[in-house]
Length: 383
Image (cartoon, rainbow, N blue to C red; front, side, top):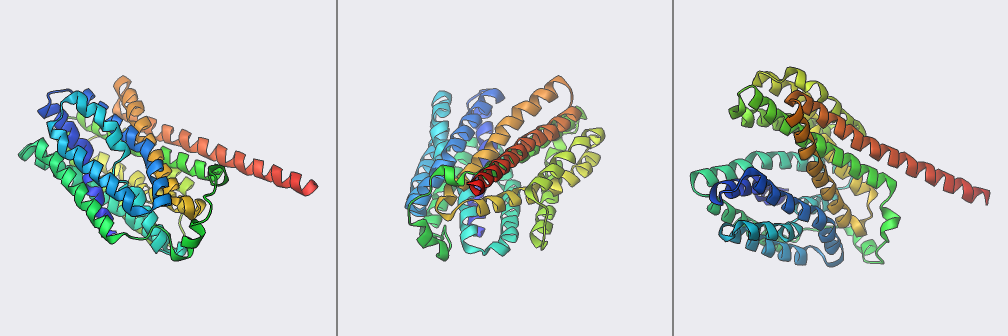
């Protein structure tokens, strides 16, 4: 877990550091910087399930070695690339980025017995929160105090070190009891990509829609009140609330389901816009919704680990990564559009409603799959 924490730190620093480089060193606007980020995220969303499948087939080491080599080469060369070359290279570099998140979840699933996984996944989610506190701040500090080129080079070097450490440690991706079962014929995707699993991924997509929309609306609210310089402090309060929620979720013997946690996450953000200034009041009213943040993400991982067979767990965990990135890709422009044409207060409502709609689609799909299965069983019994 300590290794995977350090593996995530350069990942959390990538977006803001690359944005600063495109804006300051290359002289382009924030829209151009956002386009590079979109290409990276699109490549990562497409590549995550493919990399997971390669890990399922060939093991951890060859995939980590290839991804670390590509990631190191890309980020070390980024300071020397013109904008167009950077834009073109962003998509394949995103596809072959070190999949630290899905690898961490696979390792925990292999090392921790089922009855303890809620606590382990909660600790992993807390680790993600801490890495988001450190990574972007470190990237900004290097880029502003020294140079964006040095910051990007450090990210590349960090990926190289992560790859070497993972290759040397080679942690298990399957439990001992699962190794023999996973060496047989790979189950076809239709046999395990069930309605329940797709519903779980849709709910995860909705959760990230809420989270990215909430952050964007909070930034807009602080700008409207002339307190944008306090954005970091407000986000720190949000992260701290998520940490507390993760601790409670992991320590509880019984916890709420992924869907219930997701609904709480979305519903509790709806009234935030009524109390969006001054900054300290905004920070306080954001605490309840963020208490459900880490538990929702941990419950998602727990559901995927149960629903996906060991032989295809890497691919399933990669799909989870894709679902979360899709939520970010949908939430950012949607909530941004709402804020541009109304206000930050309405942006909080858009974040909550959008998340609820995506979760609702997942529930309908889950119920439809359950109904279809019941009908099939009934038909078999009649025969």
